[in-house]
Image 1 (tube, one colour):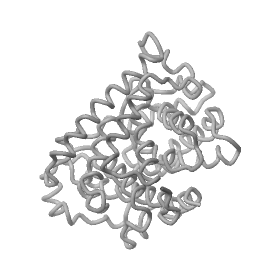
Image 2 (image 1 turned 120 degrees about the vertical axis):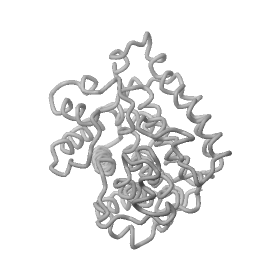
Image 3 (image 1 turned 180 degrees about the vertical axis):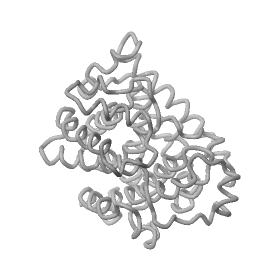
Image 4 (image 1 turned 90 degrees about the horizontal axis):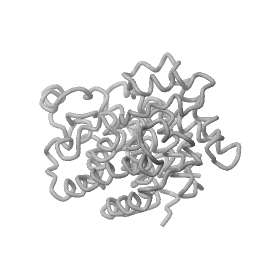
Length: 337
C-alpha cells in the first residue's frame, strides 16, 4: 500500500501551509464579503507574499519537537513533553507570533513556561481548533505504533487544549492524515474513522495524559474521554450526510460547522477535501472561501489532500513561495525517507 515516491509528508506539510496562507486573508469574513473582495471562489489566488498564521508555526513547532524526541530514542510521553513543550514556549515568545493566535494557545503556553506539571497549564475547558490544526506531523512521522500515534496526538493537544473533544478530534485528525498517507481510499475514510472512534471511545491514555482527567468534573477517566469521542462520533455522522448531499457551490460550514471548535474544524476541513479528493487546489479554495475559521479549515484540507496525493499535487509556483518553505520541506523529506 505504501508509495515511497508519493512524498506524503512533504505534500501534507506544504498543503497545510498553502491552505493556511490562502485562508489567512479571508478569516473572520462572511462568504459574500470574500466574493466581493476576491471574485469567484474557484479562482482564488495565493496571496503575495504567501504569509502563514500560527497554524503553520505551531505545526512546525510540533514537528521540530517530534524530530528531536525521536532522535533521542523511542517516542514516549516524557521524551515528547521534554522536546515539544520548549518548542511551544519558544513560539509563544517569538516576535513572529503576531498572526492572530488563539487565546487558549497563548494562555497555556505562558503557563507551560514554568516548572509546573503540564497538566496544570492545560486549558481543560477549551476545545478550540488550535490543537488539531497542528497535529498532522503525528500522522506523518514513520514508525509509530497505534498506541504511540494516539497518545502523541492527544498529548500534543493536551499541552494547550485539555478538553476531551480536543483530544479526540486531534487523534482523529492524525489518524485521517496517517490513513491517507498510507494510501487509504478517500471514499472509505469516514467509515474507517468511525470504526476507530468506536474502538477507542473508552480508552483513556493514562500513560500519555497522566492525571489530566482529574482537572475536569468527570467521575472516571473513561467518562472524561467518552465525552470527547461522542462529540466526534456525532460530527462524523453529520460529515457522512454532508458528503452525500453537499452542493460544492455552498459554504461548507453550513453542513458541518464553522470550525472554531475542534470537532467542527476536523469535519469541515475533511469535508472540503472529500468534495474534491483529486483536485487539491479546489479543496483549499472551498475551505478558504467559507464563513468559518478559514485558515484552519484550509490548512486541514491541505494536510489531508497532500497526504493523499503527495508533494507533486501542489502547483510549483505556489509551493515555491510559501513562507517557511525550507523548513517544511526539510521535515517532510526526513519523514518521507
